[in-house]
Image 1 (tube, rainbow, N blue to C red):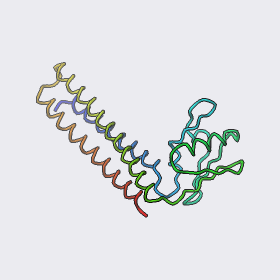
Image 2: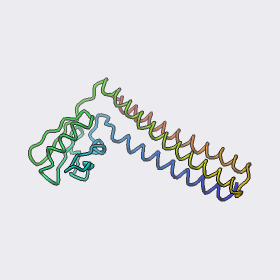
Image 3: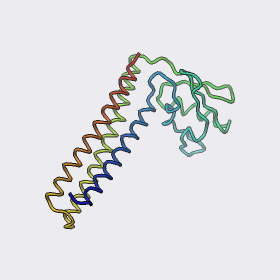
Image 4: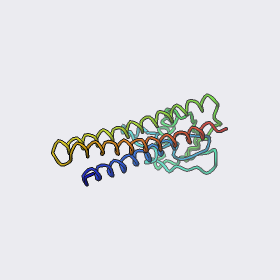
Length: 188
């Protein structure tokens, strides 16, 4: 195969790998019974009319296995942060003492575990879509190379085959990480 096709395939591997890692990070925002500051990564606070990620407004901590702490930089944002946590759909109830917001992580019920598995599957599906989008972009680039006369039809076809192998490997990696996350969520 030509050097141009090899460069496209290397780019596809890198971009698909980044999508898998991004999806893994998103899995961290789905709680599995243990306190992790990643749980709050998706919480966005309406701070003076601007949607702002919680981690930009406060210091997050996990001092115990079942407790998260949120120390706002601006004490005036305490109520806004509490409201954003309650509205986030994470099933968390914050309480504050005027300086620090404490969030006790409750035991997960069987029903809540099943809901969280659905959330993890949705995140995985978004990851698969992102990987397929990379494949689509690279297929267009391969077709353009052929149309421009830089590679022949046989090279394009081999490139498509290699691209499909890269795509399958990336989606397989995503699936194995999803299975691990589901097992973690369902673990009692």
